Image (cartoon, rainbow, N blue to C red; front, top):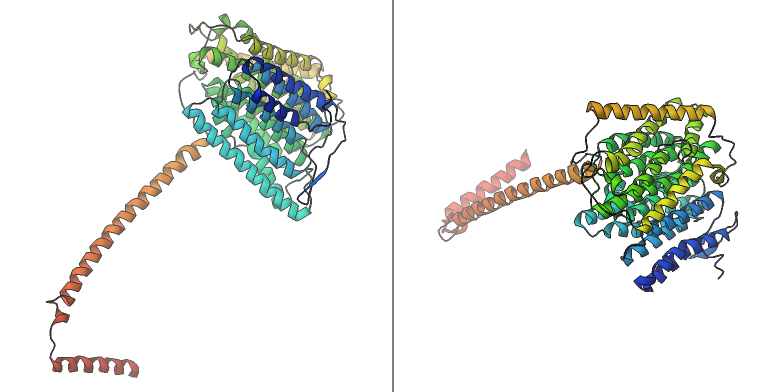
Length: 564
């Protein structure tokens, strides 16, 4: 069957329709075939191809295939296949359909050649991904999903507003370099920033991702934020503001991740940390920096999916995900523990693992361009991620202490998905030129020079030594059941509380004003009765002489007023 020339995202929506009508027993067939056929379709598109159509008088480019979009297309097909394989054991049809449509929306977004097409897929991303949170069917997940949807739809509204202003300014909808020289640029930048989890706009990620289903989090970790990274690389490369936003993103999540008890939330903070490296590279804007940012996005999707899969398997088997409740699981789930260690080594940038060959490109670009303080921040962040993702995740889940939990190993489909992701982490880390050949610019960077290898090993060694010392000395924060305050406290607690106080104050004021009004009305009524009632002063019969006196006094007052 020839499916070439179909829109790259369309096979996933068609696959969702097939899954909708396929009985449970045979559902695995269209689920696995969809990303495979979609990948074959993608291979049929040649670099440099652009499609064009006219819709309501607007010229749109639904598909633009260049090296940047092509690499993200390959990445999202791999991520979709891993996520689908990991979720094959599910009987929930809604999760399967939502996952397929979510992947298709992400692929459609990265191949969009105009802002209006991007907006359509941008909003589909929001709707389909939220279903993976609501699918947990718990009140807490519903509340988190609602907040998540508000942020995502808000991002879409900003993107639409920016698109309208951009079209009015330029009479074009082409999605190319935008920059921050106009109101439209700032609106679109903020829309991309929300989905990228910029500082103070990041809590939708740490709030919602840990509340999704064990399989849903794997999909969520792969698509939304990476579409935003792609959009920033397309529209705002070389924007210096991104350098400082990025380095901030690499550093601040470390402190939250170290004290966080929920291990999936630790990975959510770790995701912000890794996105910071990508955004910093995009802000630097050189060929080396852009290549580093894009290659790290590629690697991050795979090793973060692997770590999310291991924690999803733990949650699926034990029903627990807090570090304080886990420990000793290597006895029951040794294969999952091994895969977790591979993911931890990859995110920590151990030599011969995937993170090693991409993260260092961004750091090298920062040094080349003279951003020495930025380089120090990235170095600190590299050490920090080893602490919270490289050590904390596997240690507290599998090795810290024996919690007495005895369960089965993860289901076979989960193990296969984790195994494939682990092979990719090792394969890319050992043979990075396979990935380098796909990057937007030619790569002359050599990751395995002695200086880089020795420096990275020293960094990892002393980071591990620091963790051991902090743990043995009792300084390292223990895993406790607690609520950690982040910026979301402002809109989840402070603003609602202050709004409630204002409403209460208004109600009290309105009640006092009402009582005063009632009291005054009654007093006026009593006074009126005294004057106008049957026995009131004004109801009595007045003598003619008295009336003449009143009239004279009135006329005299008027004359005096006119004379003065």
